[in-house]
Image 1 (tube, helix red, strand yellow):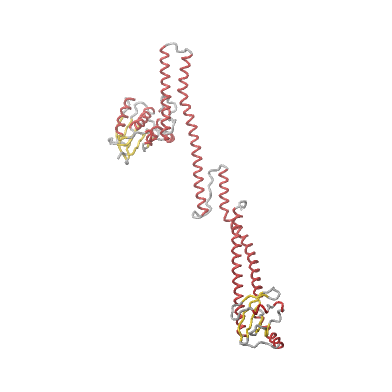
Image 2 (cartoon, rainbow, N blue to C red; image 1 turned 120 degrees about the horizontal axis):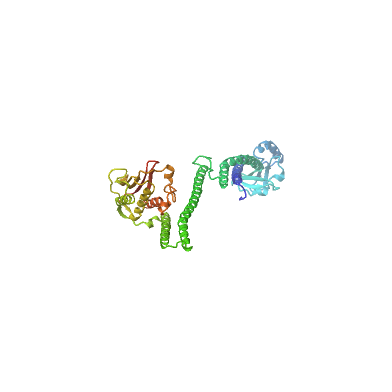
Length: 476
């Protein structure tokens, strides 16, 4: 069975069930027919026997022959019965049989003597053993009469019915086999479509989907829906894996580039010292300062990368939350901006304008201060000196809000969509002096905000400045 196709197995199982059903039905019909014929024969024999109970025995042979010829037509109506008259001692005093039946086909008298009077009908065999007879005995005033009827015609009728059932069943089975073959083919056509789709997907076409082959409530419909859902998830998984691999390649390339610059600087300065190109103590001091700067830059970049990795894996382990207010960070940010660029106007307002308001949160002050510091550094680095900056703090829509908005050149939609990506810089020509300028500051800011259950959003357009908006859950 395992070597057969599903179509062949379904058809074979269906045909086997049909054979069992037809055989069972034929057996029941034959048994009921045989029982009906036997009951009818017994009734006819008993009716004839009751008529013969009061009649005299044909003791005269010539009279018996005459009676036999006269009863021939009537006897044939009852299946050619055989009458035997017995005296009280069991001796045969007369018998009548159909002239069409030979003596060897009649039941033995010895068997007929054993039939109990007024008892049920019994089965006896012919003298040659080839035929069955039903016999009943009824009492008479001068003995008893035994009426026997041949079961040959009933057996012949049952045999004809059995043959007809076999022929009709065979023809029906053949017709149903042909019809079943086409029906199973039609029923399995959706599965073949699914098989073709699976083969196409296995060949690399992940965009293929199983077509709507049946109503959603049917088995095929539910199977197609489940497969399409699974295929969509697989396609998304492959796309995510490809995107992850692409990001990983880009990340490794950017990390290698960022690490290579300070390392090459340190290596170049040390080679100059080893070659004796720094004869004066002042040259050595200047070189050591440059090495220290590059080492600090390398250490800062390494710390930023480690922080991002920890935020990706277990952000909660880096936080030591407590009650605080974002107004503290807003005031510190204003002082930082004024210290970095005294010519820059800095305004402290509420979210979107108006007076500042309270913004209580439950967070790690050091980490949130790092977020604000990165945003302040970004505003200073990417806007011209003297560009006004607004710092907004308060609450809006049930969230604590801190905004840092500048009136700089702003960014395009494509730049804004990538500004939080790691190692992405809007202006690639800017000097890279520190981990934040390596394109990690905004990525760290967003990851820290998300670790607090918040978010960092950017509202910007070309020529309209940029507004970085931190939203955190309000402390209750």
